[in-house]
Structures are given as C-alpha cells and as structure tokens.
Image 1 (tube, rainbow, N blue to C red):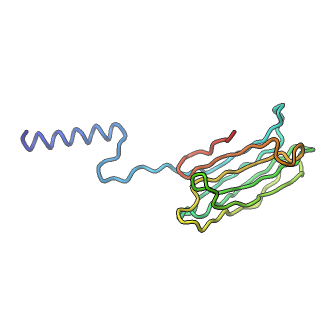
Image 2 (cartoon, helix red, strand yellow; image 1 turned 135 degrees about the vertical axis):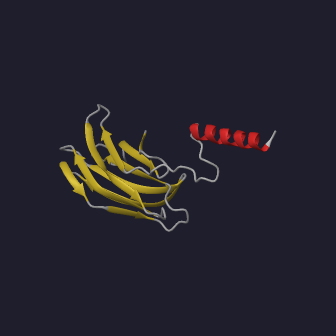
Length: 158
C-alpha cells in the first residue's frame, strides 16, 4: 500500500469514528454536565402527596463541596417531614448533614446548604431524602433522589 493510500485509509477511519461519535485521537473525552436540579416527593401509600423538596445543586471544581440553592419545601397540612443530604464515593458515605424536620404546612423556602468533605476524590454523588415522619417516625414513607456528578439528571430511588 502506498503512502497516499495509507493516509486516505487513516483519514477515512478517523472520519468514520467522528461520525460514530468517538472522540478524535488525542482529544479529551466529552464530559456530561452534572445535574443542576433535584425534585423529591414523598407520598402516602394511597398516592396522596405528603411533602416535596426541590431546588438546585452544584459541585465545586474540586468536587469536594456540593451546594444546594433555591430550595423550596412543600408540606401537606397535618403532615411532618424530615429531609437529609448525604454525599458518597461509590457506595461509601463521605459526608452528610441533617437538613430539616418540619410540620409547617404550605410552601417554605429553605436556606442554602453546603455539603463539604475533605476526602480525596470528593463527592461522586449525593442522595437527598425526604421522609414522612407523621405516620412512622422511623421512616415509613420515604423518597430519595440520587444525583451523580457524572450524569446530567438526578434519578428517583425506590
């Protein structure tokens, strides 16, 4: 095979890889933006909404801090909820804070929260929990969002 045929073959292979979505040789792999928001709702077994917390989250450049902002909490009249935030590397919890417990009905803005860690590698994902404590203080009805820094959306946990 002559030099021009080799160059043509390499160029064709590179073009096919680009069309297939592969990064060009030497290029950094594409990164997925971390999720920017979460929305957790806890319901009774009947489907009635007990409470809901939603807001924004962002990771620091180092990955060692996650900041929760613009949070809004809704609690149904006659209900009480507890919220908590935890940060993980894989399945290992590296940080966590109790967020709130309230029986105040209606919509309430929550203060910004910072979830820090000094563990090398930082926080890979956070779990935001919301628990119905009115009917079972040990956490009968519970809902969670699992937000991975490497994914673009948070996912509800069963």
